[in-house]
Image 1 (cartoon, rainbow, N blue to C red):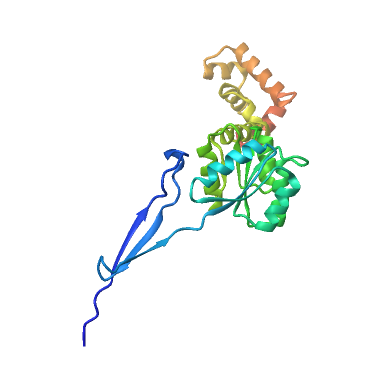
Image 2 (image 1 turned 135 degrees about the vertical axis):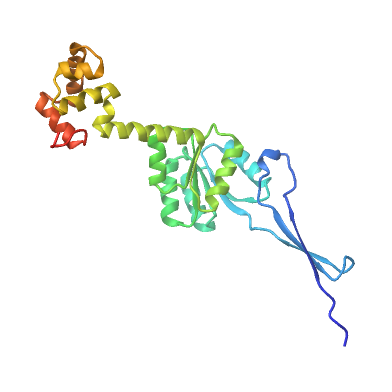
Length: 265
């Protein structure tokens, strides 16, 4: 009986071929190939590639839609299945074709992009949505995510960022462009300060409030802080004006409520 000959399996990774889109945009997932056979003369190569990301593009500017279509189609891992320049077509195409991702501009005629995103999310929940907007305002970002968007990029972003965002949201991740992230973080920080009355006070004002709540007089506080009594009184007046508190008793109660002083002080 003849012994079985070993089967040789050689795995290797191949990148997608370069194109006019440029190397910066060619970070698509590699293709995995397997060479199977007893020897090099009898071997066969099988290619196992990920399915392309099926993409819908919707925006009121036909020039932008056409440019994005050409760009995405050149990448290899993104397949444009449909394009739309109006609201009805965008939603209907999403329902009919059920793309993996939808790139939605904020100026789709008859309905803004956020409303388009809301309708796609309601009717095709599996489709991931990237908003491409000319509005960097945090309020637009909040509206977009509440409507069901998975990512938000402003229109002055580079093409590489839009492509990266599409790839990320297709994997179930969220995405905010760098400039958008900064605006949102700044807005959250500002809102936090507005909700926290202590955020209105400077470090020196907090020192004066703490000493006042501990029962220290202006003279005693001034000595501890190395200030004049008049300066301490100016700080105290400023604190009361900011917090809209009319007297020292109110300041003490405020300090206790916010953990600056205790009832045992």
